[in-house]
Image 1 (cartoon, rainbow, N blue to C red):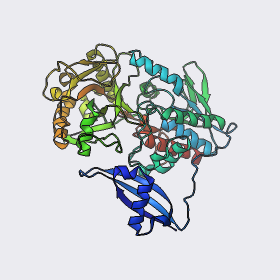
Image 2 (cartoon, rainbow, N blue to C red):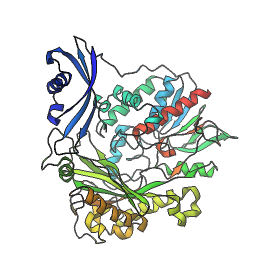
Image 3 (cartoon, rainbow, N blue to C red):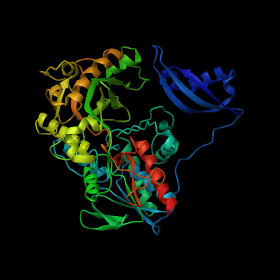
Image 4 (cartoon, rainbow, N blue to C red):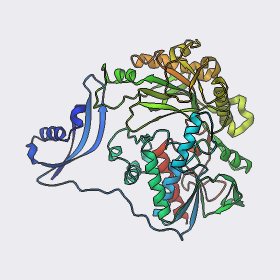
Length: 516
């Protein structure tokens, strides 16, 4: 027989199967030798008190029963002769849309402006040396922005599809099974490339197509219907439908749609800075200890504060991580964060951003729905100039920033291109900078040691989400003005991370199948 129970154990005990079995036997009031097998289903850390516990949801098997071995690998049919569907972008929305189309018997043709994960890595080295390759960087290339920028899988999008299914597909392509257990699962930027490559292999082996170094330059329209696209070499790629999964940084696509007078909508987004502390400061505050136990992961945090009617909040927190350059064009500086699977860096970083609404951009009204896009670009150009017109980032110590004081010296930093002292308190618009100043002080009251000059802030964190939404029918998921065009994922304004983008990609694939 089997029983599902919840136990709370120490971090050390949670890492040892015999200790877990002992606690399970005690909870069930049975002899430990009667337990024939057990499976940990969910795992979470409770650090609210000085005694830190790991909560485990487990299934216990007795009387000789064993847990069934589950394989998450999938058999995909051959669709080489099936109806083609064009997918623009190979981020999580595009890749999961492609795999779902194959399951549904349709042929995906994936167009990716960047390079495959291996070739793309070479261009990441270039941006660390101040050379930006516009179509191959931390945002563009196989796997999208998440591949080389972190791999966090936490999402609240449980109402819009199966999170469990997405995690199972990732495990089936090589992700560790632990992502099925943890409350805040994370793969790591060192592990994701192999997983993405395995997904590509399955798409190709099933008769799908993937074309790298292929940037969409125009749409093929006939009346109110899209027939395909034209790439930078003038080649036409035709399909029954087109899934637009280009990510939040493909600004040229928004301009392309605008030129064709295809409806767009301005949407709220967030902009600010990335802050970096020594990881021990965060560990000590969150785990109430002098030195973090080896059985605990690098500690994280999450903050939100209302300041003068606007949300100031942490974004994409990377414990044990690094800050990376995420510009997609020369003449701009954009910062983001990433962590390897071990999260073993001596730094902790997070975006700290302020909500930006349409009413905040009245001076950009002449740009219509693209006002937020123009504002983003101006902030990134400001950061480039303030950083010395290279990929070096303008930086300031946190307390200095909050008190309006230029930092004469800066702390060591994980950001490889380097940092230059700059008065970010003056350079950021008041609607951003002043709210961050108040927010940092408020966060310092919530977490002991957080408000410190041992932390640097770097500018700018501007690619939190797309400032533009591409509208679509709430049921059919296609654009209301152009039939067979399916705006999808984070770039279209319908997702906010790897898992939610993957779910949205699958939903678009299913919507296409429903009308086929």
